[in-house]
Image (cartoon, rainbow, N blue to C red; front, side, top):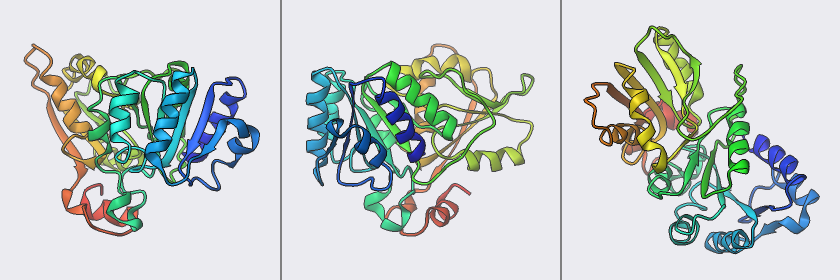
Length: 292
């Protein structure tokens, strides 16, 4: 996903001189194409993520669309106050790019596990979350964010390079992307983020189900979900995040904003909180703590 992101950003930056990339002394082997082509629009602030967010805010106020890029927890939790007070509150076009969604950096321990980032970012009312599950959704998410600059969070997998057979022509917040759509069936697998392979395995067990993803979502789009949810008897949500504050919680909360008596049963698959403090490969931790 990282390669798809930087290739797309370089291409778009060739046409849009307002695009800026800011990194926190990492991304080596990935960000060089942007740095080499646009040296005056590339900034390495060092290990100073709060300053990285502050610089992005200043550039955004001057009309730029800054992308700040770091390992998942660093441009989010370390910068929570800057995101809340400066980016989201002032509705500025800053895109926070995190790498290593879920347990992508499992071997580096809890400090690098991105398993509470949804909970933080979805609490900001102006911020849209872009959590693609494959390369095509990365491309579609970026298309939307570039055409609609706003406070945004782009959550990328560290190593996943997965192509789907589906061509996605148009993406927007709240839209479900269907990979299997059986009109007569009333059950659905719905996910967000880099759990596409997990959903594929789940679908193999439930081939009668529909299967969709929701790459673009956030607080502003919660009230759009109820009329979609009520079409189904059962929805299984899948995410590489803890339950509290996660995607399944967000979808369930959307029912409380609707006056209709919706009886859809929502079952959530998520990471067990026992994963906190554990160290191991992403595959090992996922298999042991939730996403089998």
